[in-house]
Amino acid sequence: MVFKKLFQSLTGSGSKETDTKTVAADPITYKDTIITATPLPEGGQYKTAGSISKTVDGAVKTTEFIRADNHGSLDAAIEHSINKAKQIVDERGSSLFDSERC
Image (tube, rainbow, N blue to C red):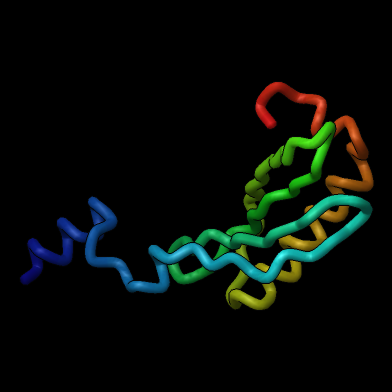
């Protein structure tokens, strides 16, 4: 039994179900963009993450972001992910979707 727990801790297997499921919040509209918060579960907490989408010349372009911020609750992570996405949109504006990776 000790070896099983050690193996699981080293490989990451056997983690809680909530540690493996990504949850997407309902999308919101902000300045011609669609923001979707998708916090990433990590070690019993949630990491700030999400996507920002916009229709440009008839095509939907999407960029994703992940930040190092961790939150103890899913609701806090969703709120912070949305606020971070709004900040990204405010700072980068339309240039956010100029990249080839979108």
